[in-house]
Image (cartoon, rainbow, N blue to C red; front, side, top):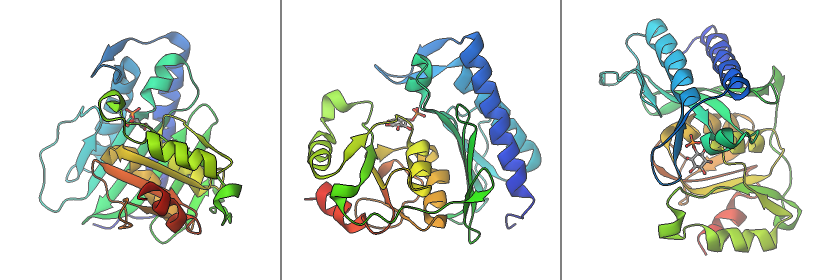
Length: 260
Ligand code: LIP
């Protein structure tokens, strides 16, 4: 089954509904539990997960839904299209009231990205892309930046939750901070990717993201004219793996600094 034009508005509306739910939790309060030493999960993550997973399972009963909080616990179906859902990307920021979090929903068929939607409810910004049809922000076409010099670029990055043990990314962060106009940390990979796509930042890298963190954003970046790859420059596919995304012009320069 190929994704149809009518599926895109359905998924966009679902992401908006989940985003509205997250904002309600922000206003009215939520509970926080620990998944790891600093890896949190809130009642808002779980409620958003249930909303999205149930809606997808009802409309696409033969598809597989892989979600960060795993509400639906689906049976794997060989060769079935796969939805990757992050019901609340940027949970740490959300738990602190820091306004950088998003809902991310991506669809893959036979390993290829078909549809990606990232919704940022604090800014009411909906990023959306369908394979071969370009990327949009609130319905308007978007494009990556044209910056081709690192020293003129604004970058984003992120750190794994176990950074205390691995120290991972500190050297790259230092190098690229000195070579660019600065490196921001949003704490939400889906937003980092969406912001590369709309040219707000010129590049983004992170040593490990989860499949649901990048599934939608990687397609949005590519459909906006940019690149999203692993550190070895192969196209990024949903997996627990490193990611580097850029406007294309800076891609090689970023890879060279990340893999010196
Ligand atoms: C988070 C990412 C963030 C990254 C964290 C984590 P969560 O996702 O989006 O950018 O640095 O390691 O994966 O846990 O908030 O959905």
